[in-house]
Amino acid sequence: MEHILCAAIYKPGDIDLAGNRLIYCGHRHCNILWQGDFVSRNPHHHGFLTSTGRFVDRKEAMKIAINANQILDKNEIRGDQLFSEDLY
Image (cartoon, rainbow, N blue to C red; front, side, top):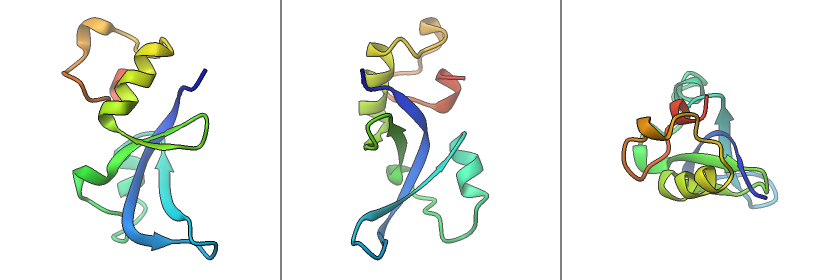
């Protein structure tokens, strides 16, 4: 079953030598932002990396996390978007 691994941010136009979109990962989104000014600060570029290697936005991540029983306290969910605080 697919589950959420970690927070992730992509920046449009950043690609590797093979032409794949670069995805920056970290424990939480703030940890990724500390990596430098080259990381996108646009909240629309913030999401999560899944166990299958997919980058998903916060809404899709919430669905995956619920299906995988990864949400620690379902009473603390703040809408339909996942935040790393919901996981750990």
